Length: 144
Length: 144
DNA sequence: TCCTATATTGGACTATGTCCAAGTCAAGAC
DNA sequence: GTCTTGACTTGGACATAGTCCAATATAGGA
Ligand SMILES: [Mn+2]
Ligand SMILES: [Mn+2]
Ligand SMILES: [Zn+2]
Ligand SMILES: [Zn+2]
Image 1 (cartoon, each protein chain N blue to C red):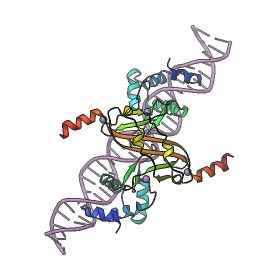
Image 2 (tube, each protein chain N blue to C red):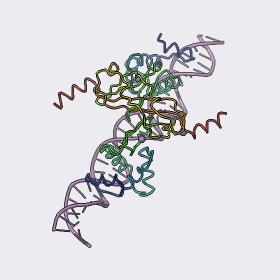
Image 3 (cartoon, chains in turn red, brown, cyan, yellow):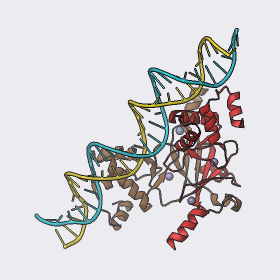
Image 4 (spheres, rainbow over the protein chains, first blue to last red):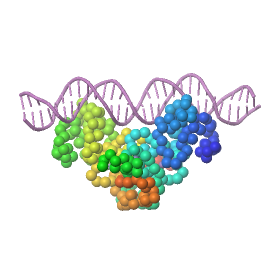
């Protein structure tokens, strides 16, 4: 049993077939699926799983802090199981691929007091944009 | 005539009543309205303006680089007329208020080569989260 | 004033996400 | 192993944000 499933059981969750396949789908590196992608991948193993269960389970995992919700484009939210290692994101503006990255400076230090408008600032998200190697190669072929 | 309307005319845009009121709505500091908010405010001056025209015009302004599209929560996109002065955003996690902020370090410098995965990285967006003074005061009263 | 390419409009349609009442089932009790 | 029950799942209705289109209107030049 995965660490995630064990933690969920410790919290009193019933380990249903639906929750197992969702946990399996979310197991991996650089995983940032949309709810519909999670549903499609889960349905490969458990064809009758419903969209409602996927949304329910993802929402609960986010509430527990086991999964992060990431919204970058104006499209569907993405679900990130890498919740226990703080990180930022690098996104390809061509294909949308998203990589986890770790940065070497604290972005909070770059926000001077005079720019805080009296807010109690607690968190910063940094999102990098660029072209991935695949998209750069495709542009080179197509565009000259 | 505003600078924005002048630039649009220079680009060959027809200056319709709809485009004028949308430009008026977008004139101000710390403006980050949703499309529906732009529509409601524009309709105060021009009641018959359609949602389609608001979406059309906002989309064109974004394509021209006159307005920035900002997506932070999973809700509606926000439209930011402050496109000619690079800035980042500070958002209240209580009420959603968004302020423009300028930071003192280049976030690109914090992303080491080993974390770039072969991407040609071109841009970074930093979003700060915290509680605004109003929401902090409300919490202090309600929560003790 | 007239013409016409461009812009606007209402409404149908798509995508994403939420909610609910009815049925199902995991897991503890025995 | 069987029973019991409250938690879980489900399909479908509903909500919100956004796109698209054919018909209509109009800005601005001739
Ligand atoms: Mn991630
Ligand atoms: Mn802004
Ligand atoms: Zn790419
Ligand atoms: Zn606030």
